[in-house]
Length: 328
Length: 169
Image (cartoon, rainbow over all chains, first blue to last red; front, side, top):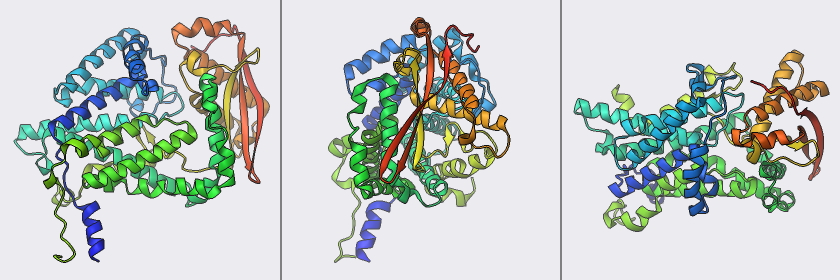
C-alpha cells in the first residue's frame, strides 16, 4: 500500500508547472519556428541546421498556395471560403505579416495580438488544403497547439481586464504553456480512444500485419522523391514477419501510452516520462514507416520533457516531499 | 463557470477530448470525412492493420517513376488520398451495394485520370515547364497482400493522362 501511495504521489501529485521565464522563451521560439514551417518546409532538413535556416528564408520567398477552390470543404472551410488565400497578393502580404508577427511573439508581445495572424493564416491555409477531398494530419497537433495558445492568450487578457487571477496563480506564459500541454495530451487520448473503437479491440492482434505497412510506406517514401536511400530498411519487413510478437509488443505498448497521456499533465516527472515514451514511440515509427512526426516530437520535447529544465532549472526543493515508509 | 466544472483538473484537456472524440464524430457522421473538423480530429494513425493494402505512384509515359515531391510539391500519400477519394466518387455513381474492389477498369481509369489532372493542376508555377516537358503521366496501383507469412505485390497501370490535355481549372 505504501509503495502504491508513493507511485501515485510520484505520477499523480498535481504540481502546476511554473516555468521560469527562460523556459517560456524556449517554448515561444520553438512554436514560432514550427509555425513557420508551413511557409518554408524547413523541417524537411531539420537534421542540417544550416540548410534548415536557408530553407526558412529561401523557400518562404517562393511559397505559393496553389489550391484555388474548396471542392470538399472541411472544418472552418464549411463556414468560410479560404480560397482567397491563394490570391498571390493577399498571400504574400499575409506571409510577410506572419513573419513579423512571429518575431514579435518570440520577443514577448502578448500572444493574443502577435499570434492572431500567424494562427489564422496557418489554419486557413491548412483548412484550404484539407478541403480538396483528403485530410492531412501532419501538422494537426501543431495547429491545435497554436489555436490553444491563442485562446489561452485571449482568456488571460479577458481575466486581466476583469482583475481576476489565472488558474493556479499562473503567469500568462505559464498558463499558455499549460493549455498547450493539455491540447497535445488531448490529441493522444482521442487517438487512443478511436483506436479502441475503430479496431473493435483487435488492434493488438492485427499488429502482426505491420510488415506489410512498412513495405508500403518505405516504397511510398522512395517514390515521393525517387530517392534510393529511402529503401535502406527494406530488409526489416522480413525480419518482423519472422518475429510477429515484436510488432505486437511495439505497437501494443503505444495504446496505453496514448490513452493515459493525460497523466503527463500532473507534474514534471510524469510529463517527462510520458514525453520520452511518446517520443520513443514516434521515433520507432519514423524508423520503421518513414513517417516524420517532427511536430509531435518537437512539441513533446519542449512542453513535456524539457531536458534543459532538468539540467539547469530544477531546484532541490522542487521535488515533492514524499514521506518515507517509516514516517508514513 | 459552475463550481463543479472548476474542480475538474485539466478542464480544457477533457473538453477537447469530448469535442474531438464525441461531438465532432457525432456531428460529422454523415459527411465524407466523419470525425474531421480541422484542426479537431479523432484521426488515429494506424488504428487498424489490415492484411491487404495498396499504394499508388506516378510514371511518365516513357516508364520512369516521377518524383511527385520535386515536380508537384506533394507526396505520394496525398496522391493516394485523392485517388481513393475519386474511387469513392465512382463507387457512389455505380450505385448502392458496390464496393471499391468491384469497380470496373473504366471506373478506375476515370478516377486515375482525374487524380493526374489534379496533380498537374497543383504543380508550382516554377515546375510547370518541367511537367509539360513530360509526354504525359501514368498512375500505377500496387496491391500488397500478407498471406501465409509472405508478402505479395501486384502492379497495375490504372490510368493515364497524355499531354497536351486541357487541364482542370
